[in-house]
Image 1 (cartoon, rainbow, N blue to C red):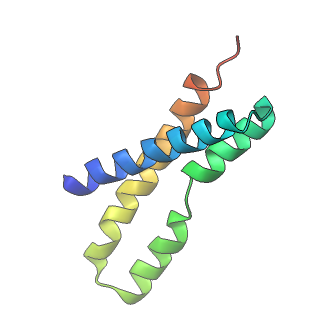
Image 2: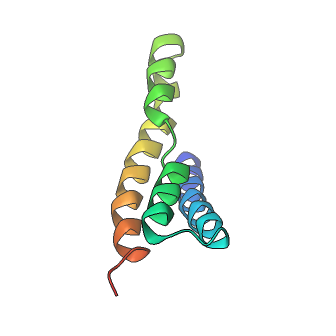
Length: 85
């Protein structure tokens, strides 16, 4: 359970940080979207490959939770933050 909460918090903070930074920089909407998703969607797939290759199987569990949460939040945030006016 703590892994899920940590992954959720990190994912949400990634979206918020990316969006706030792009707003502070006064970027256009296209750049805002790009920066937000680039900051929020970290390379968890590479972490999963490394965990499976070099660590015990259970070490991959938090990464799998993170990937599922991250991708779900990406779909939600795309609709919430960048909804059409």
